[in-house]
Image (cartoon, rainbow, N blue to C red; front, side, top):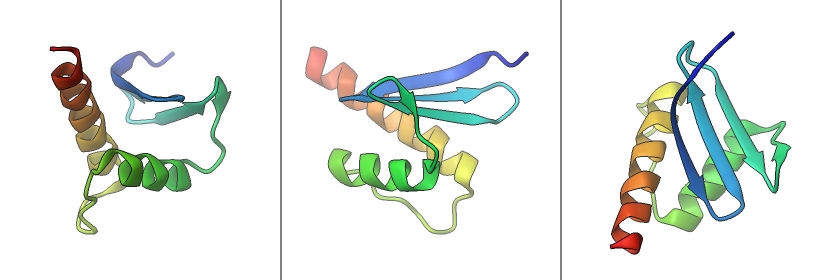
Length: 76
């Protein structure tokens, strides 16, 4: 069983990266079947720039960090 390594919430989205590297994205409580499309949508809405040289896992990890920082700035 995998354990959530890092996670972020952005609007109706929840993004989780598990310790085994797998990624889960929920939108309104439903698992997104097309994670890449969801990542692009979240990135565009949040103003996160994706580097095409990053792997999928690197992109998700950096996006989670970015969203958590964004949420931290909003809450302070």
